Amino acid sequence: MRPRNAFLLGLALTLAVGFFYAGAVLYRTFIGLDPAAFPAGAAIESAARAVLPRPPDFPLAGLVLALLSLLAAGAATFWLVRRAVRAGTDRARRSFLTGAASGAGAALVATGAGGALALARAFLGLGNEGRGWRPTATRIFGDEVPHTAPDWRDEWKGARVRAWRRLGRTGFEVSDISLGTGGLSGENGEAIVREALERGVNYLDTAPDYAGSGSEQAIGRALRGWDRTKLFVATKFCTPAGHLPAGSPVSAYEAALEGSLRRLGTDYVDLVHVHSCDEVERLLDENLHEAFERLKQAGKVRFLGFSSHTPNLLQVADAAIRSGRFDVMMPAYHHGIWPGLHDVIARARREQDMGVVAMKTLKGAKHHGLAGFREQAHAYSQAAFKWVLSNPDVSCLVISFRQPQHLDEYLFASGAALGASDLAVLRAYDERIAGSYCAPHCGACLASCPHGLPIADVFRYRMYFEDYGWEKRSLASYAKLARNASACLGCPAPCAGACPSGIPIQRRMLETHELLTLG
Ligand code: SF4
Ligand code: SF4
Image (cartoon, rainbow, N blue to C red; front, side, top):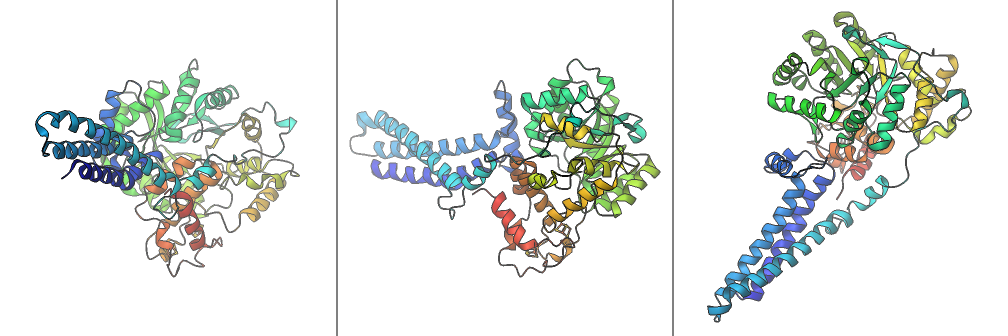
């Protein structure tokens, strides 16, 4: 082959690798997909982390693979061109130097061009029906969703925790309104945690995969100087890249908790949850329980819990209660929730004296319409918290304090009783979200889908994106689904009318797929 043809062939090869492989890998890296999803991803991830003195918080395996694939294609071009030059008539003197120089040039050009094409496909949707990252990225970096009440009333200012409740058999008295940290990170997150502690919050809920481990790091910095025994710190059995699947080695669970301890700067956590548990298999994974027992004996964790929003809550909670192994449960719980949940909570308290931590208490946190509550005596959030805490079986609720104003707004509801005006606010809120809010633990529509789509999970990830502002986490969670809403295109939609809340399932599924699929 002539050197020029060899160069063109190599260039085409690298462009193809950049366009079809490196672009896809970069996309998956961008959204934080689990490294194990890539070929040899787990090994590449640990090798890259071992080499770098200060490894970043996002998964590295995808980035390394994308670069390696482009460099490999460039090296193949190098080899092709050099071989072609050597096979030419004038090979005596020029073969190596010419081949090496042109091959190296080709490798550089091809790698650059391949990278450019990878980015063009990913960002602009080139060759992918125009479906690139740009529209979604515009929403990610666009206007902030309002997360506070429209008016910040003087009477709220300086509000502090006024009530503490027993967290089941742990015996710890926790603040009735406690700190969730799903969106917290950096200096702002650290300052909010510090101020919350100053005002009497003593239960902190975090996880390695919150804000790419930024939540644990912010808490770690904020905890310095505090008497650790006066605080109750809860984290999850997972890694910054996501959940540990059932059957993960004992060592993986132990390493996950060691990572949390490092980031939190503490010798022990009070509670570790099986994170967002939607199946009994993961809840009762023997490796997880063996790891927990070992960590407990080593004094690195004290109690075990599980968190869940699953429509399988009955099975998951039943298994947890029967096993007797769990000290705390953390279900999604808010006004108008699936009524069966009250019985589950009461049973957990009665039979196992489990602590109950309520999450997702703002029923979707649809703050877009908060201005409509300007005339109400209290904020919507305060009414929602009072409803949750009116159940004496609830030990405490966790809520993300995102802005300093939340310390005043949220803590003003601590220890307050639910009144008629609060119920009026909750009814008004329900009218605003009618037809768009998918209730946790419901699952009434799931049996109607012949493709077995996890409809409730898809809508939850959309809620994370639109209402919580957790865009990256939402995209990563959606990308990990084994079956997604692309199946809704062209489906005759037997799910129509299956939602008691009146959600037009097919339309919202298709919208969600468009929103949560980058390129
Ligand atoms: S439209 Fe989507 S959710 Fe509804 S039945 Fe078809 S595939 Fe399932
Ligand atoms: S879409 Fe409707 S029926 Fe399906 S889980 Fe959500 S609230 Fe329940």
